[in-house]
Structures are given as structure tokens and as C-alpha cells.
Amino acid sequence: MKRRNFMLAASAGTMGGLGLGAASAFAANGKVLRFGQSASLTGGQASYGKDVRDGINAAFANANKNEATTGVRFELMTLDDGGVRSRCLQNALSLVDSGVTALIGLTSGAGAEACMPVVEDAQIALLGTASGNMGIRSGNNNGAFHVRAGYDAEYKRMVGYAKDFGLRRVGVVTLADTSKANLEAMSAALAALSIQPQLTLAIDRNSTSFEGVANELLAARLDCVLFTANAGPVAKIIDHMHRAKFPGLFYASSFAGQDLVDTLTAKQQSCVMSMVVPRPTAMGVNVVNQCQRDIALVQGARMGMTTLEGYIAGRIAVEAALQAQKVGSVTRARMKESLAGLRTDLGGYKVEFAGSMQGSRYVDLIAVDRYGRLVG
Image (tube, rainbow, N blue to C red; front, side, top):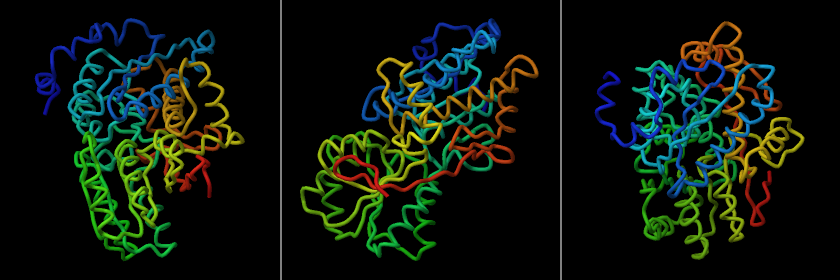
């Protein structure tokens, strides 16, 4: 399906929101590189979206300190999608039409999946989606460059950890609007260790109450619950089950982000969580230390695992663009070509795209204790 068909599906209000002509914005000033982001700045994933945005902005702010030397200024254009798939698609259309060099840091995996036909039709890079969504990691999606591990790698670590502790009665909680490929990856990870989930529930991320879900999980008498959902639903379900004296363990994927850590800490609750970036408290790791330094350049930004994920995506965008600039103006095609051959170490975090769209498979499994400490 061609891009004009997607344009007809998008709302006129969204398309006109940027006030930039498609051709002029793309070529008017070669020294300004604009990257487009659709993020959940409102709704249940607002903290997650803002953290990713702030991380990218921190990387760009640091790069812009060298503008006199590089001759390049980096700008991020962010549109709010509220975590809604259709709005993410509309935003992507609008940003592509405005002439951005690449899309970066989308915070909805389902939304990013919906955007793939637009990405392919526009021949633009989709860089650093802040989700492990497996639907954008198929061999056919050659425009998506991933700076973080997919859910397949996360699930293998989560399930392996559960089996090591002898936890056989497993419940799985996923989002109803996410890719079927995510549940398939979880099922494969469980099957590889001969574990059959006792209960699998698909939830509405925008529901006002999750007590019914929590009660179903309690009734199943589980050893542990594996979550792939945003922080809001996960925190509410954990809170209800905690008050019901659930004796088992909770495992959350990286999608719950820093927001889940902060929410559980405030209530002195705990869970096991997978991380796809180094621990934000590991100041001895160079990329963490640099993020801590650069985040101070962004007003209102906070350090955390989600901010660090956005920062890494921003750093990769800068490196790829500066490499592309060495052979001429930074066009969409040159940006994709530069990313495709990129190999770099940001200081304790390697990203290598050569021969693969999956630049990193880094996964760490940590326990968040009742005091907010990252243990293990």
C-alpha cells in the first residue's frame, strides 16, 4: 500500500500540526538535522514517553555543544500519541511529511508496528523504538534499527530465572493490543524449558480497574506472574495481589520502565525486572556517567533506566548522522546506509548493526527491593 493511501486515513488536524512543507523542511538547511518522534506524553504511559524524549534530547543537547566544529545541529520534533496505536501512525505520517531525516524513539511497540508500511514506503529509518515488540523485528522490516534487545531475549532470561528457582506454576499477563509475535516469543521461551503457563491473560492497558485480573491470578495459585505491560496496569495488579498476601514472585519486562520502579518503591513493594540498558545507578559505566552529565542539559529531566534507553538511541542517531555527513549531505538514504554499517561502543554498551537490524541483545535481570534498590 502506497503512502498516499495512509495519508487519506490520517486526520487533517494531525497532518497540519507541524506547519512545515515536506520538501522545504527536508532540504532548506543542511546544517539542521530534524528527527521525528511519536511518544506517549499523556495518558497511562506519560512518564515513560517523557523519559525517552528527555534522553534523546540530552544526547542531542550534548552533540549541539560541538555545533561549531561539526557544522550540524540536532533537533527533535515530538508529537504526543497518548500511547494509542492509531495516533502513533498519524504522527508518523505527519513527521515523515514534514521532512524529518529519521524517526526515533517511538514509545508504543504496537504503534511502531502499525507504522512499518509508512517507514518502508518513505524509505526512512525507524531508529531506537523503546519497545522489545517482536512484530517490528521480522526479517521483512528492513527499515527498523533496534538499539535494545527484543522481548525474545528478555523472555528467555525471565523464564530461565523462574525455572532456576523451581517456579513451575506460571501466569502470563500481556497487552491485548500488542503484537501476536510477543506472545509467541513468550510461549517459545516457556516451551523451551518445558513450562506450560497455568493462565494467560490479555489486558486492556487503558482499563480503569485491574482487580478482576488480579483475582483471576490469585485464584490460579501461581508461583509467579510474568508481565509484559506498561507500568500502570502492572503496578495496580501487584498492589492488589500484595494486599491479598500473594506468596509468589512478580517478573516485569523492560516496558514497565522506571515508572514501575518508582511506583513500587513508594509502596515498599518489590519485583524482578528485566533491563535492556545498564543500571542507571552504575556510575562506573561510561555511558551511564555521560547520561547523568548530559541529562542536566534538559530542564525537568530525571535519570533512570527509561531515560538512559532514550539517551542511547539519541547517541546512535548522532554517531550515524556524523558518519553520513562525511560523504555528503545527510539524506534519509545516507542515514539508513550509515546505520546499517554502524559499530560502536558508547562506553559499556555496544551497538553493532553490521549484518543485522538488531544492534544489541543486552539484557540484565535485577530485583527491585522494597527500598527501590536494584539488587542481583
